[in-house]
Length: 421
Image (cartoon, rainbow, N blue to C red):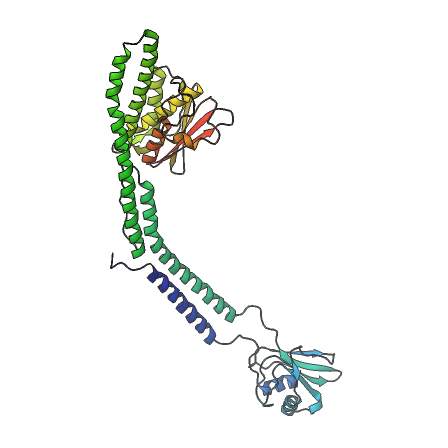
């Protein structure tokens, strides 16, 4: 781990590279030339334009117009009599016939004209005016600057995407591994990436080991207690036989209920501690077979056939999952109806009943072990409270999820989602 680079290094390198690229592009654009308007114009060319009334071929960025008004020029331009006299001498024309306004009045009257200007020569009742042309909205210079900015943005975006992907990829793999962690299944924790991510992976792995060891220890203790309680129950059953008949029958029923609860606890702990290897199976065929078996046993079960669905899982565990749901639907809702569909890489199975539905605000609590929707302790109306806990445990072991809902038309609905193979 000591040789792994810090996560800070690629971030710093990205910032430096971004600054260098942006600076290089800006300097390149700066030295590619000034904007194409208001370039220096020789005084002789302005005099030539005033004399001929036309723009010389070698000059760009100026225009010639004839106006009748005595006022011309832009607000930012100022008069410069010495410049006017120099232009008049080059025409040649009397000094009083030339009048100009200049953005930058020059120190050298014979030097080039810079910035905007408007110079007029009186021509009869009007003026011949030579002025800088209005700057264009979009020129090749603008295009080069814009193209440089877009190219810089594209390059920096690609670099940022690559660096961010390299940083986030090991974190995402670590999160996926942590999500798959279940009792009895310890996914390998990836240790790649920068030094900080590797340290986080080691901490997550150690935490996962501690949590799973504690959970397995509690599950083993629960299984041992449930198993050992069978012996004193057998002794109690022996002494119960000596009670009067009415009391004996009630005591025997309670003992049978306790044995059923202990059996459910043992099955629950066994399912949590040992998982069979997963194999590819047709989920629709499994549900149809289960429905036929339960219908033959006298349960009111209906199945609406759906598309072919192939998942990877333990057929025995999945059969038990749907058996528990069907038995709950029949016990609390008189009958069960199953259907399934496929959407977005998931197989979705619905188990519906015609009962009172699930208690408002308690749907999530029903997945906890020994919590029942029917609050009485009557075995005729409720089970041990482990059915839904087993259902969720099996679904999560297959990478899926379970939700409890109430139907708009009345009754309950259990939605089971499993990933497609």
